[in-house]
Length: 145
Image (tube, rainbow, N blue to C red; front, top):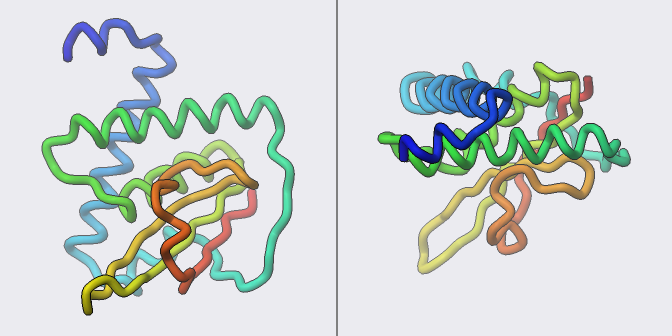
């Protein structure tokens, strides 16, 4: 693992450390506070479609942010699930002035209600892309910078 860290550029290493901080902060809010308290981190609740076209420069940065969050989440000693990842990347994009949409969805599977969170920038999935189409969107939060 240490060899892989040494292979990262300074920029990627800095993003990974930031992603780790944001993931741990999101986990703290999820586990130790109520949803009404940390819901302001999700953005403004919207019901209409917001259309925008990602810029090429933003796409490169977004992919770097995405992989930084995934890199830290894979190696984290604490399980970081979809909601923590979505909140973390939303905070990171907000800090850089990039719009981001956070979706909350549910589905019923074997008489159990399962929740999922994912983030998008335009048509680009940042987190939670795997299996999102099986969920019904119950909340959509937008951060316009």
